[in-house]
Amino acid sequence: MTAIVLKSFVFDRMTDEEFVAFCLEQRELKVERTSEGEIILMSPTFSQTGETNGEVFFQLALWNKAEKSGRVFDSSTGFTLPNQAMRSPDAAWIANERWNALTPRQRNSFAPICPDFLVELKSQSDTVEDLIRKIRGEWLPNGCRLAWLIDPDEEEVYVFRADGSQDEISGFDGVVSGETVLPGFELDLKELRR
Image (tube, rainbow, N blue to C red):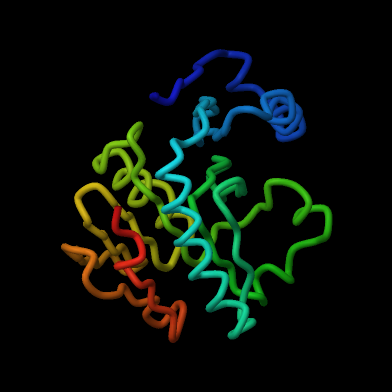
């Protein structure tokens, strides 16, 4: 199960409206677009990856329900980044003031905003190296303030910050903190054990 990258003159010239129509025609696939206009088609995730992603989303949404400081988005959500890529993290959070600045029309499409916080969850079709490139090369330069790459098979969490610093957490024995971006949020890694 690997992603298929479509490169074509047609895709390079696709308007945002044409891209949305293309995505609506491909509902059974997860679709992303690079800043160069390449279309990336991905099949649905395997069940265990979906379960792990559900737990990450649940913990983030539960924290946000109490805090009411932002909006939480699942793995089906696409965001149009400032570099014109349309990407879809496995979980994301955007501060209320940034989300509320969007028009209703913008919110009802692939919103033109980069999440403040996001999670990329390694699945069987991913490599850690590719996801690190995606975080460093696309998410952080486009405005993400905090990103986590979670590798459930190796029980590793990579933490990336907007200032360029990063940490690695080995083992799912404790928690990973939302730091100043998500004050008070701690993801209980023990719940992600397979």
